[in-house]
Image 1 (cartoon, one colour):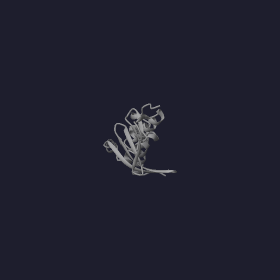
Image 2 (cartoon, rainbow, N blue to C red):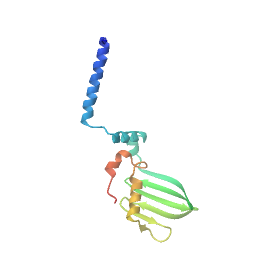
Image 3 (cartoon, rainbow, N blue to C red):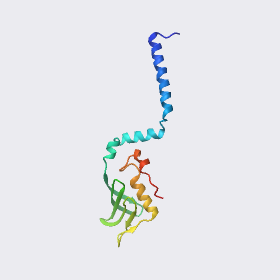
Length: 146
């Protein structure tokens, strides 16, 4: 079976496209991770939209076995956060991360420095993507918090 001239042209174009794709694919492998980051960034509105978010405030209602509380979570670039917790309308707990250190206040007395483990949790809570920062920003924002 022989191809007509139009068929040969399409076949040649297809081969050329396949070769070009293979050659360009060899220069920089586009990983599955790159695809996930690109899709996530697009789903979040794009890089400019994500970068335009400078602060957030989220009202929470937390139900756990044995207690129920309300909270207000606030976070701001470049990586600070605070959560105030109320039980029955009374302020009972606050914890915060100032960009370097964590602290907490448990209803009486002065605020106390948070433990290293608590500070790391506060840091990860504000820095990880999904609130203020996009997945594409994670690599450049990672610092050693251990």
